[in-house]
Image 1 (cartoon, rainbow, N blue to C red):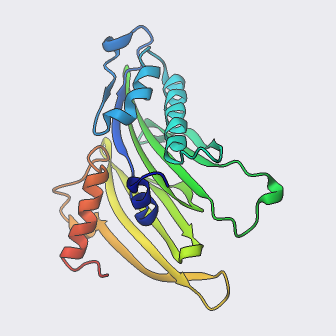
Image 2: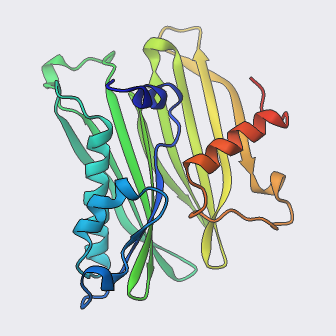
Image 3: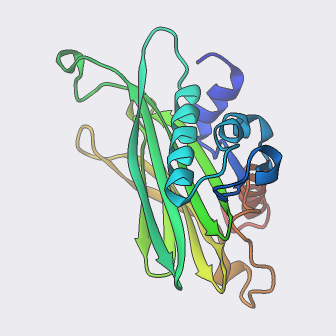
Length: 256
């Protein structure tokens, strides 16, 4: 690892980036007329802004978002000794209550010759996911990234819900857990429904890991029964999610 920041990411596998990007999709706009603005992570959005400065349609927005994610995942695993390749795991549009949303998931992993790859290979991976809300003449994009050992990632869909799953499998250090971030479509937007983590411990059989405990840092029906302070996806950034974790331990709903 090249710096303390990446060590912390590897250790806790917390959310790295949850920036908000707005990109106009008017095919006739250029530069500032397109209203391309970054939210909580301006530096990470710089390349996306540059590539999206010209107007484009929904397909073009998706292509630019995917390219942005590919740049991000390769930056997270920056290592001069080994080359990394960015793979597109998901790139598709879905409708919620008749409104179109785009979902993208990209993975970066080391390039190994198959003859040197073994079942016990401990490789660093990174993933970036993005949710695109298509609007007239623009698109709102929320991105989240993670970094870990033998990491796996996916986006699960079920009715009005979708869940981003980051699974960290550092078997070497007995550090195995899964992060789940679930959003629910309510009225005209996605809102945080649940943020939780499953921790695993070594089982009786060699190489086996079994569920040890689950921490539910936030659950809307538990923590906001009246839906009086729903948390929109654009608000649930890295700092906000970390505060949910701290609050859960502070109020006794989560235990060490």
